[in-house]
Image (tube, rainbow, N blue to C red; front, side, top):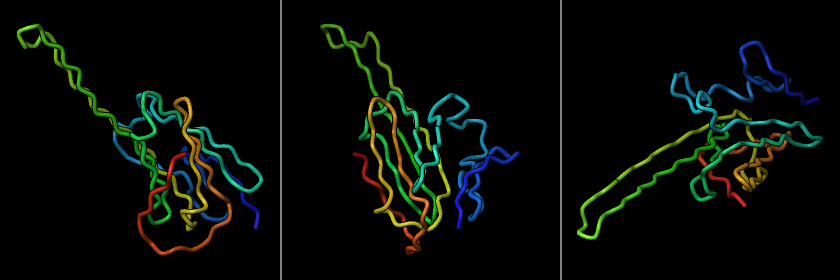
Length: 145
């Protein structure tokens, strides 16, 4: 069976054999892509798809990738506190920043072990094989190298 990735008028990506591959992940005006976070390049290779996802400002430890019910979920969360005090211990400035973003891609019934991920220089690269192998429905996390 031939696999191919096409972009339809609804803005979603679809595989020729299995329907929606890259679904909208939220129907909210506060989506991360509105602010330019987690921009994704998708490259079809001979045996798999490569997703290059921009996650600037996040470390590898702040990114989680999971596979649940055929959906590849990528989440990044940052919680940062800056605190400056004078010599008496009074605050001169105290700031707290929190941010999170996520993307969700439908990849079908594939085994978690067949998905690989690598993080370097603010770019998360995820390799998803084209071949589908049925697996029991449960949430599984993918290691980032």
